[in-house]
Image 1: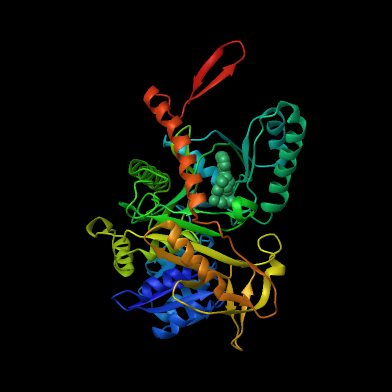
Image 2 (image 1 turned 45 degrees about the vertical axis):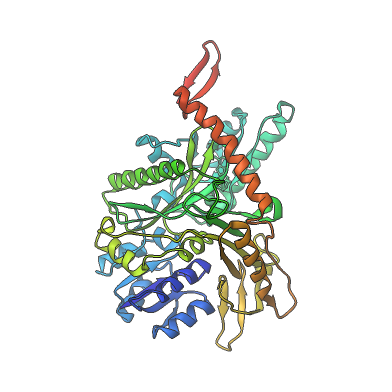
Length: 492
Ligand SMILES: Nc1ncnc2c1ncn2[C@@H]1O[C@H](COP(=O)(O)OP(=O)(O)O)[C@@H](O)[C@H]1O
Ligand SMILES: [Mg+2]
């Protein structure tokens, strides 16, 4: 059996490892712009080949797959989905684990995702407005003195979202100015070069609560959830600093428990069921809308909000990075078997099982990431490749030197009985990397610590108390607002 993997980050190294552990012993091939040293080793050991090429180009990926004669292709990142790589492969008769262009719209266009949610009345609908130009958005920003999330309406690689809390009336003018300025930079900078969506700016009501990612396998008929994972987006300890692609993530059991034998958890089992149902409804809705089948991974990046309980913030059409490491580390079922079941649309006939373990991932990044990636790039890296160390944004040169790619260099995985224990293991592994030219590396020490877990459980309890009260009163998802001349009105 032969498999082609598309992409070369930490997520893809974890996927490569899952294929390496498969009883089917597939020969692994890979296509990407950078040569990930970890994936490269697996490719060589299994008798496959590593091709350097643009993973977003449908023709390149198809030619590579055809040349290698693979049985199927597994797409790691989102951008190949947005560019129609799975469509091209399927047209040519090569099965693919990856959302095709039309169904990947649920991730690519955050505006379309919200449209779909309202059209199909899927729980967790937030108020929103979408705009094609900066000028259109200005009057709205000037009139609407509320807390909002301002977003590029397209997925642009995890950048550009700003949440602005607007409570203090005396700061009204200042907040207006900040909102306007950010909306302008979304339009002029973040959305620059993305001409594949009509709407450029999305303004959403701001909600609060703990966040989590629910990744699922789907063949378009069945949706199978993986353990919920909590990602940490901010660069520095205590959720400070700029947003990154993810500095680390935690998981334990299906519902983010403290430990295997513990009742304390961030989510309840019922919340996982509801979240899965929401993802399932999204898959059904996008299939109905497009007439296309969804084959691959679908994920809800969710928040447990006080208004709705489980609420979608955005959708993924692939595994998360680093969230992929958490779930693949505990996946008991053979990944090849899952892929084959997706391709033949028989996911309902297999059991997808996960070990009850806690997992913590910590990413190590060169200084400069995420705001000055050029500074973070091109440093020679030395890494002790122990069990649990995954290569991420790194490039193995012809001369054998490994250079940093500008994003996260390695992702360190700890597996244990409890999240704090797994965190200590991952923490120890972060010291396995250094840069030969003395340039600095950083990571977050607080991910999975007892303190941060306690805080998240507390936040979940606060949100839960309110949404449960709403549920009992029959006002889940309803807002009660003051309408001049009418008084208090319930709107949904
Ligand atoms: N409506 C919202 N209310 C409150 N916070 C939000 C909202 N939308 C997004 N956020 C915050 O901003 C982060 C980034 O938003 P997201 O839509 O996931 O964009 P991306 O991951 O592409 O940057 C989220 O993880 C969440 O913390
Ligand atoms: Mg996100």
